[in-house]
Image (tube, rainbow over all chains, first blue to last red; front, side):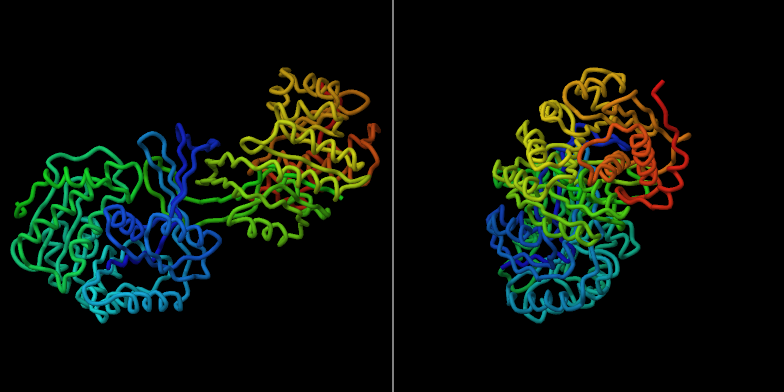
Length: 311
Length: 311
């Protein structure tokens, strides 16, 4: 089973307007609202492509029940931890192809909530399971939160996939997460190395089982447990909505790892995994809504992925 | 007693950001959230300046309880009617002195909710009370809703102050509301007359007891039941936040009418009322938050108001 942890979930509100004119008033007829956050997007993509997934994280406030119901409605199992602080909002103003985002930072959550979250990981995970921790930390979250979750997953025998940045990532590396999957900017920020291959090697040297670094439309770079660094990409960038494309990449890696005892070092397994990661990512770009992917797009794009040792 | 009716209340969410850059992502640390809508602002100003007030309108969805609690916390009595539809939001992005607003249109509310709202007006109002109906109508609201509320107030012996526009205002005029108080643009839209004095006379001819038309920083125009049209303004415009200034004007008129059997035609009463209306309005401009007014500002500004027959 795959468990996605979203430490800082958000209620994603989308307003579609004809034009955004700063300093004026806009009447908004087209409003959509859904449970969001990076870990939630990972769960959505997994579910969309037929995988069983359990989503967790802290939720609270008046929107908590609707947040959880929104995920349950699409068949995602949920084990969210009640928080006394309201779940933050993220407002996207979409005008044509332009999106302007306002992400609330999130409230400080009491320590007991983080202890409950750790307990969910400990109690719901076992050998062969995969835990994915994704996204930002709310204001005031303990800097070792992700390390604690990594330890809990490891103790339970599950593999950890991390999509977090900065200090929370750095503190988790000694606990040997199976996969770290920051984007190129985050990897640079964490390691100080601008070249993604060098940054990936540094992350592996610091304790990660392997590193998969996304570079947006330029594809991804992987530093596997053995063999050379691999680069994978589509022959040409796709037009569409890139929101959630990075999350789909982590979803694909988690899906490939699910049920395995450890991260394989077989180059063929890696090649297939990176092919899936790029294809899942691309399929999400082709959809207007984050987290959604069409299996026929995945199948078609998988045939187009270009993979090889990084130049 | 004064009753404020807000047919289309909104949860007002304010995001303060350094700069609004369309097409980019903004992390928002400064979030405020409060019960809003024009009638709610009228109630806030009345309460702020020491008047007892009952606020009503439809509320629903996860935020309903917090919406009502927010008003109760400042001493406003509430008799909101439960709606199966969630209360809309209004998001203001404030960057320095620039505000960019996104107002959700609001959901269609079932007829039973409007019947309940009419019943609140009928049961809570009596002779000498004042009812203020303010603001937009939600999508799909019956076009005669305001007329029905005006009839209910009239039957109960209460005076009606209307701050609504277009067809809902036009349909209410035959029911002889005590005061209609649109802004100049709304009066123009309803009567087809660009000159506010002419528009005010047309509204009175169509059934209103009197018309008080706001012209923003240029002050107001009143067409009282007897005597010449009066113009009132501050000697120079105030710098500040004009949100809620128009609502404060209606609040002042309602406060002056409260407890009277009918709208007086005494020119001295009118002069005092317009002086109060301009001063309340100005005091709200001086505050950063809509609906709030400092009584010392009101007292000082009242001494500065220039009133006389319109040129």
